[in-house]
Image (cartoon, one colour):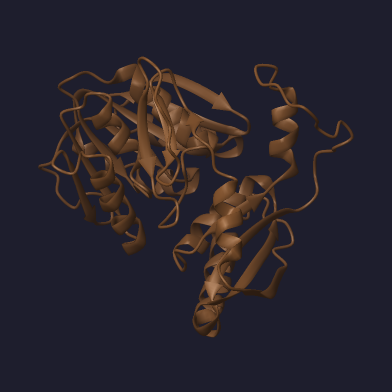
Amino acid sequence: MKFTELTVYTTSEASEIIADIMWRYTNYGVAISDVNDIIELQRDKSMYWDYMDESLKTGGDVLVKAFIPLEKSDELIPKIRADIEESRERGRIFVKFGTLEITKRLVEGDDWLEIWRKHFRPIHISKQIVVCPEWIKYTPKQGEKVIKIDSNMAFGTGEHETTSMCLKLIETYLTPESVCIDVGCGSGILGISAVRMGARKAYLTDIDDIAVQSATHNAKINGVEERVKVSRADLLGNAEIKGDIICANITGEILVRLAPSIPKNLLRGGVLILSGIIESRLKAVQDAYSAQGLRLEKRIREGEWFALAFRL
């Protein structure tokens, strides 16, 4: 099988936005190459590396790559370009997108997929949660809960700071009777993890068909499909479904727009966890949800990203 490797040159802060757009149009893989991630690992003294180039410098382009089946390239690449341009126009005040130069090259066969898979390893997200690609065998240590993710299908494995912060906050607020809601669920990692940590039920929604398929599949391979309901929807579309914990790991711009809608599904005393927020959008997000009668209870930061926990 032949693929078009589509590369967009962007910035660290816009890379996740670009990657999310690409995932709308392919289920064959999206990868982000960011030297700033390597430099951040240099500063992490809890990890040991045999060798790392100490001369690495911050800055420069971040490369976001998507692999598109060759026979669909002429149809899908213009749509990707259009969505990227639309996102730049909407977010240019708050996010630096860089040049957004696009390059293409032909990739033969499925060899790249095996190389891509080799980059994934079990990821220790929190005290309890270890995220592990479906194809890797991992024996959990005492107290660990393994969440299997098929990363071929859609979205990420939980390694990104925005996802890991959500999982840590879920771990903080979860009780055995909790009902959790994940808005824009992607691979389903948040809702599935909540149930594995003891939540009674999880409702997952996404507007992307591939995400819905991915979350449904991941719930099944983790053995929690009876307690995880996945729906294709913009938010829930059903105000009667209430949650003790609602998670939305999207972008600050979209979170502000959704502020009047999300709290309607939160139970009194419940916790709303928001992530995917860069510093320039932090105040706008806090103000938007405070205006809905929610009280900011906790704010955490990893890298350039923030996550917030509000109490109703």
